[in-house]
Image 1 (cartoon, rainbow, N blue to C red):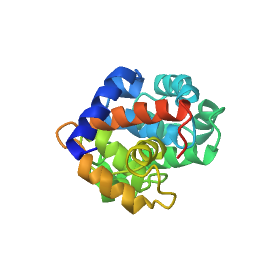
Image 2: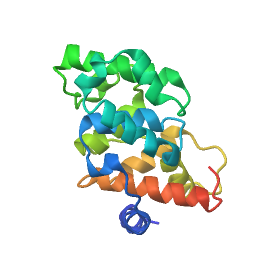
Image 3: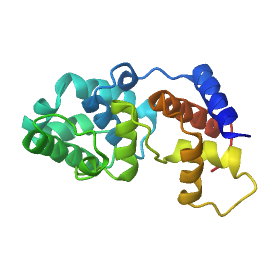
Length: 194
């Protein structure tokens, strides 16, 4: 499959499989940051109710930064990996202190935030800032392995990254990554292994 053909196919599958989520309805940087930290190692269906409650209690970065960690942990309960809640709380304080309450739209600056690594920073840039960055997570990996590396058992992230770079929709990266997420999730539910 050629790059353009693949990109079009992913958009078509994404449209057909689109999952409505609150952080897709409101792509503000804070919403995306919270959702991306919550989604690390946690399924979407478990995150949805927690995200909604979290946003009611901490509607913006200033509210989260000024809250006691104990309050954050109470709302985080049930998501597991409480260290992520601590990182998110620390990141909110850093955003207020060092970035004037605005999440930076620069990869290196995002990676300075506690709990934000290369791929989370990439996701934030794609979803909140609609930047055409290359990042890999489990659903992205599933799609690319299925389409480009099905018969290869030794695939590095560098190999996948190269394919993402070649096929990324640079005009609508946010929509493209949403399509990848939804299509990748569907492939996994359909029994495709990565």
